[in-house]
Figure (spheres, rainbow, N blue to C red):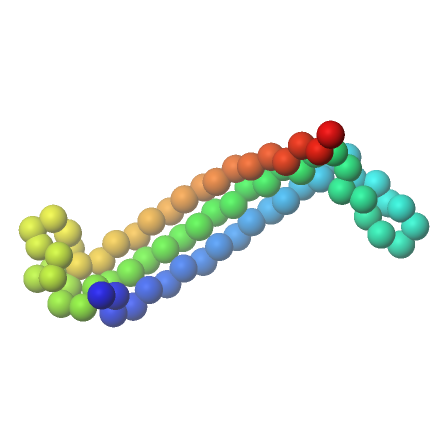
Length: 71
């Protein structure tokens, strides 16, 4: 079981072919995305709970990319 868990997510979506249509924006035919995810957790009991393979905590960093094509 986790004693604490923290997570942060930042993402960016870019539509290079977006068009302004009156008072709204049309997304166009392509979206490109990039996302960064940070996670950290500590477990109850620390090292004793996860031994011998861990330190009782863990950190993960992930970068994800995506593209959406409309046709």
